[in-house]
Length: 257
Image (cartoon, rainbow, N blue to C red):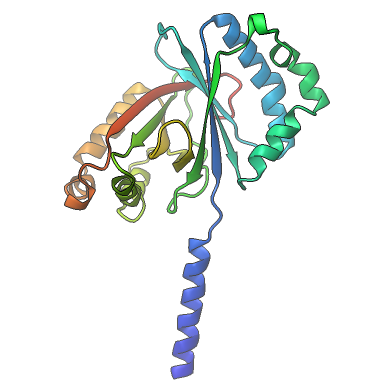
C-alpha cells in the first residue's frame, strides 16, 4: 500500500508540474501613433494586404487590429495591433523575415517605401506581454454582432511598486479574478504581464462585448458580484494599482477578431 501511495503522489506531482509548465503565449502589442487620415489609410492598407497575410503564412493566425470607438479629435491618433506568439524568439525572427518577403515588398510598398517627407506614422510604441499563469494563451471571442458594434476593452494596470504590482497579478491568478471574469462571460481575449514596454510595472488584459450596452451590463454584474466584493475587500490586495487606463476599441474591418 505504501508503494501505491508513493506512486500516486508521484503522479500528482508530475501532473502539477506539467500544469505549471503549460506553454504561455507572448503578445506583441504594436501601437501606431499618427496624425492624419492619409497616414491611417496607408497603415490600414499595409496591415490588410501585406502584414496580416504574411503573419498568416508564418502560422500566426489571429491578428487583432483596433482603433478607438469614439470620434477621435485628439492630435495624436492610435491604431493597435495585437499579435500572439507561441515562443518569445518568434518575435524578432518573424519581424526580421517580414522585410525579406517579396509579397510584402510588393503589396506593402506604399508603407515600406514611403519617403521621409510623407511618413505613414510618427511613432510605433511596442509592448511585449507574457500570458498569465492562469490564462496563458489567447482566446478568440464568441461575438455575433458587427465589427462596428462590438466593443473591445483594453485595460492597463500600473503598480505603485514592483512588490504591490505582484500582488495585483496574484489577485487575477490565485485570487480568482480571472475565474470571475470567465463565470460572468466577459469574453476575455488575453491577460498578461508587460515584460517590456514604456509603462512598467504593468499588466494588461482585453475583454470583449456585443455592444456598449452589453459592456455596461457586464460590468454592473461584476461590481455587484459577491465574489468580487469579497476579493476586493482583502487587505492584501489594497493599493495594488496606481494608474488604470481603460480604452474602448473597435476592430478594423480586416482584423481577425
